[in-house]
Length: 123
Image: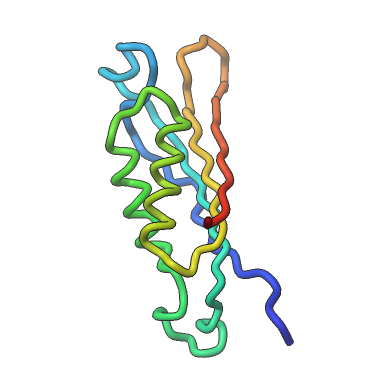
């Protein structure tokens, strides 16, 4: 057997943060949902059952929390910062997809959300 893809996902990280172009968004804040998908080159943990051969999703969660705590005007900037930190922290990560969703953007729609999704490959 040959493993052809090893993906770690962190889904529905629900956080309150202060991102937005409008002053009110930066002062009042809003709820956000972040999803992360990481392609990992080292899949030795599948055989060894050792956490040293993988990427801890708890560590990825910590990165998301720290970056979401830093206010930005644009969701694009937040997603980009999360991706940079993941690549810098985990050498075995080859690809990252980050989605940042503002759960209730100030546009007046019922059950409306707005998202940014970035996908990157390690240089």
